[in-house]
Length: 564
Ligand SMILES: *Cc1c(COP(=O)(O)O)cnc(C)c1O
Image 1 (cartoon, rainbow, N blue to C red):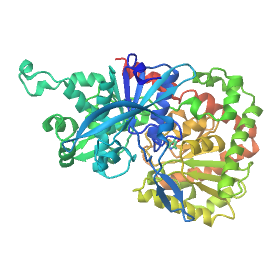
Image 2 (image 1 turned 180 degrees about the horizontal axis):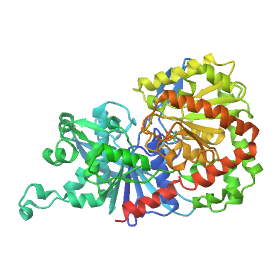
Image 3 (image 1 turned 45 degrees about the vertical axis):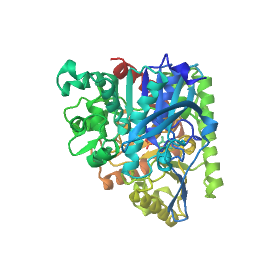
């Protein structure tokens, strides 16, 4: 299948700095990228005419090794590009530091069993036309310094629009998945310039309304500091003035170029990724109308084999119509438990093989895996080791995973701390930390544990998606009330809350609640009222998975954002 075959019928371009499709393609780091991949997969299932645009990231994010003290060692993580992508014979250029940098592209086609197909473009500067330094610009995801990042964003935003145009695509909507691609708006402003002699005013040359009608922006960051920002000296040096600086400053902020603001000012539709996140974002950016489209996960990707078989038997059609999960109670309890135990055994066997930890199939297993960074509080469960040991001895085992960004010292310290406590409790509570958390490990973990734990500081979790993956495998959530869980939580029915609905966190209160519910509600139900426990598992499918999937999510994007 040639990329040209998509030109005529594709009208929406989905831009994302990372897109995670399969574990073998190292083009993602975590939640944002996997969400992008899941979105495009649902688009393929539903035959929505999208094309994805991202960078090729030849060296990946990084491969994580952990030494016996939990010190993180980072390795480049190259992947077999030629095995998965097809090269396109194309070359455009973008201006970086006033000189041309040439960009080519590769593509991958996401194919659904429904026959739907969605192509994804991977932009690449590693070609002989470029200087050795510029050739590395599409090597590392989130690597390098601010300048490297800005150059990557020129390639993604401006280069992406030019590649699409060169290929002949007639794009009606540009969807920016987070601010990394916001520079595409400058390219569009240039493209739709009005001739000065028609408007007689320098300001009216720029058809802001026209560009706004073409753009959709999704923000994922509930904290001020998380938004991509560049000093104007750097912008002047690296980007130059694709449109005049006064206009850039008017659209992207006076002090620094704020990519979110630029995206906001040039998008007709803006959304956050959960209802709570919408609320938080509106407070952070007063005056902007921000909508909410709560994230989801791609059902077929995130259901493990034993549950696929079960769903095929009792809920045929589920993969393309996850609303059918609402009837999960049709599945006999023994078969739910049996499928869960198959997934659990697969995980425990894997853990025991690589760590020698000798975990048991029958012990209640807590899973916690996500980016290791302080606000996620991976050590909350370990904050009172003696109390944990008292509750957990012989009854609980814990499986951790997660990478810290190479420059996140706080995140790295967190991993070392977990290793310390793991060592201290080793004769009483089995704790393991699995290295190199990626899509493949996530699949094993979210399906193989008994409960999925999530306890970030509020309101930092814009949505969270790993808990949604767990629900697709009948694994209930035990989570603070932030992001998606506020919408999915029914206490004691779909899982459990940690702490209150209040918007800020108190780690002491949260830890107290966590220990209390674990000891008095969760463990007694799991060990002594297994029939009720299995009902909670069914509710995870029927009341959570039926809604928190990318099929529902992308239908919202189509009706609220794309067709306007
Ligand atoms: C799903 C996933 C994430 C995101 O998890 P959150 O709960 O949103 O933090 C990160 N990394 C990997 C490998 C995943 O599969």
